[in-house]
Length: 208
Image (cartoon, rainbow, N blue to C red; front, side, top):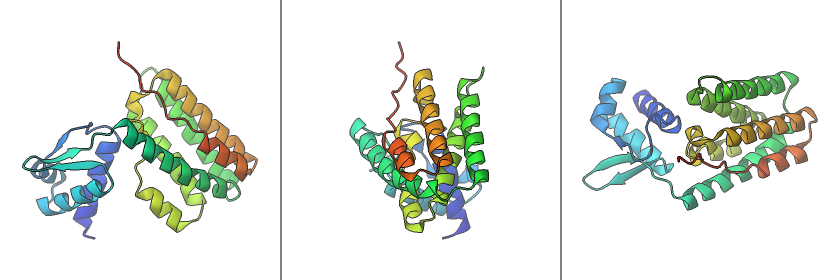
């Protein structure tokens, strides 16, 4: 894979998952290529990869757009991630070092700080959450499992991104992260898997 294609893929994917490109946003290859200072060809290839992941939709004579998710789409992918991440959590419980558990605790603290601080920083919350789950997946030490998860949409996006979270949903998410930490500290794989399995899809904030 060309470096320029990977650059385009990483940049566009990050913009989608962070909410910088919202649902239904038009992804124009020419504009993206100019912004990334690369040619259109690697951008088009990156968009095809993102289409295969379900993040991008193509429409005849219109081009590429950030995919719109139905409630059924979200529920299906969320269930799949829970299944895979529950297994990862079970494997990681007996493999995480004390330093890694401390790192997970620090990531959770960062999430809480940016979620409830005077100026909510959704990008920082999303990044800390991504690092948290990424460390668990890495600690699970299963390359095939990691590859399957890498090709599955992150929970943050499935849940319409953290920007849709209410304060109650944020608090619920933080509680689950801390419950996972307790299971990891106890090196209890069954407990860790149960916490992950019972992770509830957050309720989007409803505008008045």
